[in-house]
Amino acid sequence: MFCFKCGASMPEDATVCPQCAVPVQAVPTPPPPAPQPASTPTSASTSAWLNVPPASTQQSPQYPPQAQPFHGYQQPPSDQQTEGKAMASLIFGILSLLCFSILAGIPAIILGHMSKANIRRSMGRLKGDGMATAGLTMGYISVAAIPLILIIAAIAIPNLLRSKIAANESAAASTVRTITTSQITYSTMYPDHGYASDLATLGPGPSGSCSTGTAQHACLLDSIVAGPQCTEGQWCAKGGYNFTVSAPCDAGSVCSNYVITATPVAFGSTGRKSFCSTSDAVIRIRASGTLDSPPTADECAQWPPIS
Image (tube, rainbow, N blue to C red):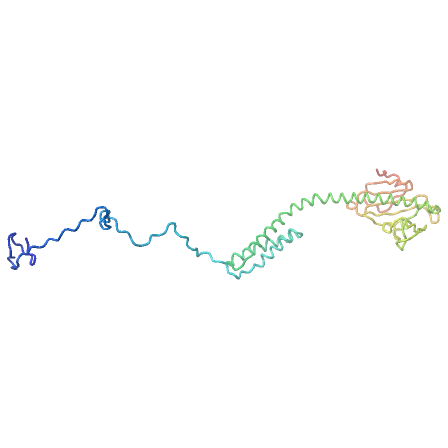
């Protein structure tokens, strides 16, 4: 064994250290630890047995994690201003659909694109993106509708022109028939004069109105087709047609015949047919251009009667 003081080696039965003369004392043995219940292991023994470090007192994260506020988006400032071009684009877009079509549609498109670009660059300081989008949409609709409008116009305009020509021709034939009736009435009222030599004689005269007719102004026709200027050889216009009355008789003699003529003012746009009538009271028709001078009674008799 060894000395507990100097550490020198000595026999097992020695009572004094041969080197330092210190008596050998018996070292007391510590009492064994009290046994612990097996059912409640301590945390230290459990950790040592499992080789697991003790649990940390740090709080574990929550699951599911709580939503954290997103700081990337910022609310737009409260003093936003409306982009002026957006409002202008909206106004032009409405006008393009109502009446001005492409004249307002193109500005609506241009201003709408400029406005949306300005709003994107303003970083929230400008508003009006919805108005710009609406103006753009209406502008594009008005421009896209132009081909459709042109197609409809190409179909409708010729039909309207034909309808107008047909209406003018029907009205001209009716006016020739009315003048023919007035000639018969005039010859009955004034047998000493026979038929009227011009439209002015059948009209109301320079005053434009009369209570009773005379041989010079019989008041049988209105002043539109039988005004004071509608003398023999002069044309008077009504409803897209020119009218005149000519009588092959000398002054002071009894007129036994006449020629009523109606011809289009503009051939192809106001009418395509000319009409005439003589003392036989038959309305005749001929498809021809505008007449520069009225036909004679014999020439009128060669035209085919109106059906």
